Length: 196
Ligand SMILES: CC(C)(COP(=O)(O)OP(=O)(O)OC[C@H]1O[C@@H](n2cnc3c(N)ncnc32)[C@H](O)[C@@H]1OP(=O)(O)O)[C@@H](O)C(=O)NCCC(=O)NCCS
Image (cartoon, rainbow, N blue to C red; front, side):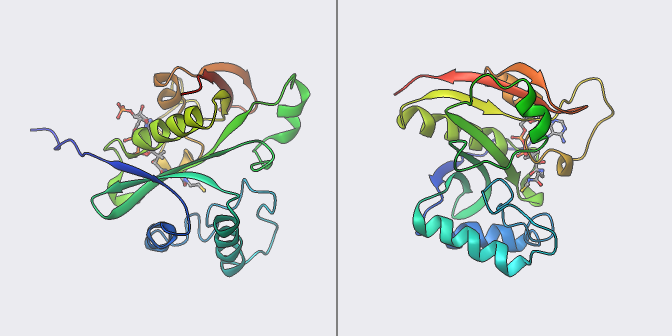
């Protein structure tokens, strides 16, 4: 018998949902040992930065409204997220040099990192998070959306830990198509989202 389908609810990351987000991050050792999902923001993750600094910067972004992030809930528990935002809010993508070489026009929106708590993987949390982010983008006026996922096909199976920008197959399911390769296994993918 397969696992029971879960009905997830999504909510934006705001001062009201900060504690739910923080509980998920803390239950997962700060995520990547303490990045607190700050790597795509302008402050980035300079060498030697502390977990406290990353947490505090993220909380300030939430307080200032300079974060776009969809949280996924299983009941009352936040179990995952999808970060997104305009390029000015998420300037620190991976492989920036290669990305810039063939850049013709910046997108309106970027998908940053996606994350599902280790106990909740393989049950559609990331799928719900990306769906929520695309809905929110549509409600905010839509436009071109870029994601920077990892190729899945043609390479050995990878642990979820290697997919912090998501697996390509997930974005392909949402209609994203390859624009260009920026690393051995990483692609720029794009799609248009209509205003809702
Ligand atoms: C990658 C990750 C987000 C997937 O989350 P998830 O909730 O388990 O994903 P879902 O169950 O919604 O899977 C959706 C689709 O993604 C793909 N997918 C998910 N995990 C995959 C994996 N390990 N390998 C290949 N494809 C994968 C599949 O296409 C899947 O669809 P299917 O179940 O119909 O086959 C999760 O493994 C994770 O959080 N990894 C750590 C990433 C990280 O460190 N992020 C933070 C960086 S700051």
